[in-house]
Amino acid sequence: MDQNSVSIKNKIYCDENKVSYKPEKTNLIAELSDLVIHDEPQEVKLVNIITDVSFSKPKPKHFFRTRPSEISGKTNLFAFIEDSDSDHTIYLVSPDIFEEFKSECYIAKLVTCISRQGSITLWPLRINKNGRANPWNSSAREAAILAEQNWIVKKAYNPDANCYEFREAQGNLGKPEWPEIEMDALLKMALKSYFVGDRNHPVIKRLQGFI
Image (cartoon, rainbow, N blue to C red; front, top):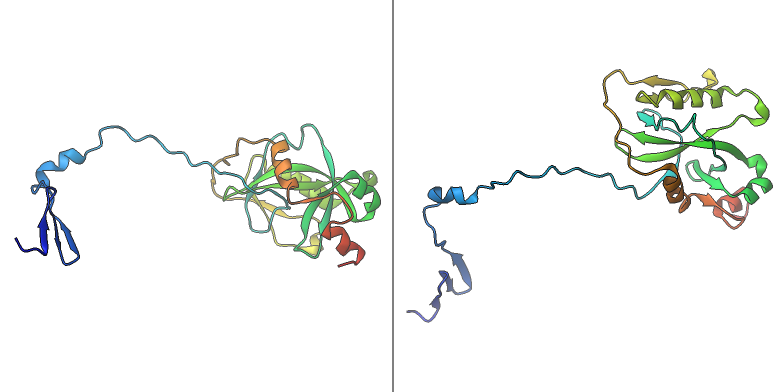
Protein backbone atom coordinates (compact mmCIF):
# COMPACT_ATOMS: atom_id res chain seq x y z
CA MET A 1 0.00 0.00 0.00
CA ASP A 2 1.19 3.46 -0.83
CA GLN A 3 2.60 5.09 2.34
CA ASN A 4 0.55 8.23 1.60
CA SER A 5 -2.71 6.22 1.86
CA VAL A 6 -3.86 4.60 5.11
CA SER A 7 -6.90 2.27 5.46
CA ILE A 8 -8.67 1.90 8.82
CA LYS A 9 -11.69 -0.11 10.05
CA ASN A 10 -14.41 2.51 9.51
CA LYS A 11 -13.24 3.08 5.93
CA ILE A 12 -11.86 6.58 6.23
CA TYR A 13 -9.21 7.08 3.56
CA CYS A 14 -6.57 9.77 3.90
CA ASP A 15 -4.54 10.99 1.00
CA GLU A 16 -2.55 14.19 1.28
CA ASN A 17 -4.87 15.85 3.82
CA LYS A 18 -8.02 14.85 1.90
CA VAL A 19 -10.67 13.04 3.93
CA SER A 20 -13.60 11.07 2.49
CA TYR A 21 -16.12 8.78 4.16
CA LYS A 22 -17.58 5.61 2.66
CA PRO A 23 -20.66 4.40 4.62
CA GLU A 24 -20.92 0.81 5.77
CA LYS A 25 -24.48 0.55 4.31
CA THR A 26 -24.55 1.18 0.61
CA ASN A 27 -28.27 0.46 -0.05
CA LEU A 28 -29.77 3.57 1.63
CA ILE A 29 -33.27 3.11 0.16
CA ALA A 30 -33.66 -0.24 1.89
CA GLU A 31 -32.60 1.22 5.20
CA LEU A 32 -34.90 4.27 5.33
CA SER A 33 -37.13 2.51 7.88
CA ASP A 34 -34.29 2.86 10.36
CA LEU A 35 -34.77 6.64 10.24
CA VAL A 36 -38.45 6.69 11.16
CA ILE A 37 -39.34 8.33 14.49
CA HIS A 38 -42.16 6.31 16.03
CA ASP A 39 -42.90 8.49 19.08
CA GLU A 40 -45.34 11.36 18.63
CA PRO A 41 -43.54 14.70 19.02
CA GLN A 42 -44.62 16.73 22.02
CA GLU A 43 -46.30 20.06 21.32
CA VAL A 44 -43.91 22.92 21.97
CA LYS A 45 -45.53 26.01 23.46
CA LEU A 46 -43.66 29.26 23.03
CA VAL A 47 -43.57 31.32 26.22
CA ASN A 48 -43.22 35.09 26.05
CA ILE A 49 -40.46 35.88 28.55
CA ILE A 50 -40.88 39.41 29.88
CA THR A 51 -37.56 41.15 30.51
CA ASP A 52 -38.57 44.81 30.41
CA VAL A 53 -41.74 46.65 31.40
CA SER A 54 -42.30 50.38 31.00
CA PHE A 55 -44.99 52.91 31.87
CA SER A 56 -46.51 53.91 28.57
CA LYS A 57 -49.62 55.25 26.89
CA PRO A 58 -50.94 53.26 23.91
CA LYS A 59 -49.20 54.29 20.71
CA PRO A 60 -51.17 55.46 17.67
CA LYS A 61 -51.87 52.73 15.08
CA HIS A 62 -50.94 49.94 17.56
CA PHE A 63 -53.85 47.66 18.47
CA PHE A 64 -53.94 46.68 22.14
CA ARG A 65 -56.00 45.07 24.88
CA THR A 66 -56.23 45.75 28.63
CA ARG A 67 -56.40 43.10 31.32
CA PRO A 68 -59.99 42.69 32.58
CA SER A 69 -61.04 43.74 36.11
CA GLU A 70 -58.00 45.96 36.78
CA ILE A 71 -59.88 49.20 36.18
CA SER A 72 -62.96 48.31 38.20
CA GLY A 73 -61.01 46.36 40.81
CA LYS A 74 -59.07 47.55 43.83
CA THR A 75 -57.58 50.96 43.13
CA ASN A 76 -53.93 51.66 43.84
CA LEU A 77 -52.88 55.20 43.00
CA PHE A 78 -49.34 56.26 42.17
CA ALA A 79 -47.61 59.50 41.21
CA PHE A 80 -45.93 59.88 37.82
CA ILE A 81 -43.79 62.39 35.99
CA GLU A 82 -43.17 62.65 32.25
CA ASP A 83 -39.67 63.40 30.99
CA SER A 84 -40.17 65.62 27.94
CA ASP A 85 -36.45 65.49 27.07
CA SER A 86 -36.37 61.71 26.48
CA ASP A 87 -39.23 60.97 24.10
CA HIS A 88 -41.79 61.61 26.85
CA THR A 89 -40.72 58.65 28.97
CA ILE A 90 -42.97 58.18 32.01
CA TYR A 91 -41.52 57.54 35.48
CA LEU A 92 -43.15 56.60 38.76
CA VAL A 93 -42.01 58.92 41.55
CA SER A 94 -41.69 58.47 45.31
CA PRO A 95 -44.15 60.25 47.65
CA ASP A 96 -41.35 62.66 48.72
CA ILE A 97 -40.62 63.67 45.14
CA PHE A 98 -44.33 64.04 44.46
CA GLU A 99 -44.77 66.41 47.41
CA GLU A 100 -41.84 68.57 46.32
CA PHE A 101 -42.66 68.63 42.60
CA LYS A 102 -46.42 68.23 42.76
CA SER A 103 -47.09 70.70 39.95
CA GLU A 104 -44.97 68.59 37.57
CA CYS A 105 -46.51 65.25 38.55
CA TYR A 106 -49.90 63.61 38.23
CA ILE A 107 -51.82 60.88 40.04
CA ALA A 108 -52.87 57.78 38.11
CA LYS A 109 -53.94 54.18 38.47
CA LEU A 110 -52.28 51.49 36.38
CA VAL A 111 -53.76 49.09 33.87
CA THR A 112 -51.86 46.33 32.08
CA CYS A 113 -51.76 46.55 28.27
CA ILE A 114 -50.73 43.94 25.72
CA SER A 115 -49.97 44.64 22.05
CA ARG A 116 -50.61 42.40 19.05
CA GLN A 117 -46.93 41.41 19.23
CA GLY A 118 -47.28 40.37 22.88
CA SER A 119 -45.32 43.23 24.46
CA ILE A 120 -46.51 44.30 27.92
CA THR A 121 -46.72 47.88 29.22
CA LEU A 122 -48.34 49.56 32.22
CA TRP A 123 -50.66 52.40 31.23
CA PRO A 124 -51.06 55.20 33.82
CA LEU A 125 -54.68 56.38 33.66
CA ARG A 126 -54.76 59.90 35.03
CA ILE A 127 -57.13 60.81 37.84
CA ASN A 128 -59.03 64.10 37.54
CA LYS A 129 -57.66 66.82 39.80
CA ASN A 130 -60.04 68.12 42.49
CA GLY A 131 -62.86 66.07 41.00
CA ARG A 132 -63.07 68.32 37.94
CA ALA A 133 -64.12 66.66 34.66
CA ASN A 134 -61.38 66.23 32.08
CA PRO A 135 -62.36 64.86 28.65
CA TRP A 136 -58.84 63.54 28.00
CA ASN A 137 -58.83 61.49 31.20
CA SER A 138 -62.42 60.34 30.71
CA SER A 139 -61.85 59.22 27.11
CA ALA A 140 -58.70 57.30 28.15
CA ARG A 141 -60.63 55.48 30.86
CA GLU A 142 -63.48 54.65 28.48
CA ALA A 143 -60.97 53.27 25.97
CA ALA A 144 -59.28 51.16 28.63
CA ILE A 145 -62.64 49.64 29.59
CA LEU A 146 -63.51 48.96 25.94
CA ALA A 147 -60.11 47.28 25.41
CA GLU A 148 -60.95 44.69 28.06
CA GLN A 149 -63.17 42.93 25.49
CA ASN A 150 -61.99 44.29 22.12
CA TRP A 151 -58.78 45.09 20.27
CA ILE A 152 -58.69 48.85 19.85
CA VAL A 153 -56.24 51.38 18.44
CA LYS A 154 -55.62 55.05 19.22
CA LYS A 155 -55.98 57.38 16.27
CA ALA A 156 -53.38 59.97 15.45
CA TYR A 157 -53.37 62.95 17.80
CA ASN A 158 -56.19 65.38 17.06
CA PRO A 159 -56.00 68.55 19.20
CA ASP A 160 -59.35 69.79 17.88
CA ALA A 161 -61.18 66.75 19.29
CA ASN A 162 -60.25 67.75 22.87
CA CYS A 163 -60.10 64.06 23.82
CA TYR A 164 -58.48 60.77 22.81
CA GLU A 165 -60.04 59.00 19.84
CA PHE A 166 -60.00 55.20 19.55
CA ARG A 167 -61.55 52.68 17.18
CA GLU A 168 -62.16 48.94 17.33
CA ALA A 169 -60.52 46.36 15.07
CA GLN A 170 -62.79 45.38 12.18
CA GLY A 171 -61.61 41.76 12.00
CA ASN A 172 -61.34 38.92 14.49
CA LEU A 173 -57.84 39.25 15.96
CA GLY A 174 -58.30 36.47 18.48
CA LYS A 175 -57.78 36.54 22.21
CA PRO A 176 -54.66 38.03 23.82
CA GLU A 177 -52.24 35.58 25.42
CA TRP A 178 -51.75 37.17 28.81
CA PRO A 179 -48.58 36.17 30.69
CA GLU A 180 -48.99 34.39 34.00
CA ILE A 181 -47.63 37.32 35.95
CA GLU A 182 -49.62 39.73 38.11
CA MET A 183 -49.56 43.51 38.32
CA ASP A 184 -47.32 43.64 41.42
CA ALA A 185 -44.59 41.64 39.68
CA LEU A 186 -44.86 43.77 36.52
CA LEU A 187 -44.64 46.92 38.61
CA LYS A 188 -41.46 45.72 40.32
CA MET A 189 -39.92 45.07 36.91
CA ALA A 190 -40.82 48.56 35.70
CA LEU A 191 -39.36 50.19 38.82
CA LYS A 192 -35.89 48.85 37.95
CA SER A 193 -35.61 51.41 35.13
CA TYR A 194 -38.50 53.85 35.51
CA PHE A 195 -38.49 55.09 39.09
CA VAL A 196 -37.52 58.53 40.45
CA GLY A 197 -36.70 58.27 44.14
CA ASP A 198 -34.57 61.34 44.86
CA ARG A 199 -33.44 64.72 43.55
CA ASN A 200 -30.30 63.29 41.94
CA HIS A 201 -32.27 61.49 39.23
CA PRO A 202 -31.58 62.95 35.72
CA VAL A 203 -35.30 63.71 35.26
CA ILE A 204 -35.29 66.02 38.30
CA LYS A 205 -31.95 67.57 37.35
CA ARG A 206 -33.30 68.40 33.88
CA LEU A 207 -36.46 69.79 35.45
CA GLN A 208 -34.37 72.13 37.62
CA GLY A 209 -32.02 73.12 34.82
CA PHE A 210 -28.86 71.47 36.17
CA ILE A 211 -28.31 69.40 33.02
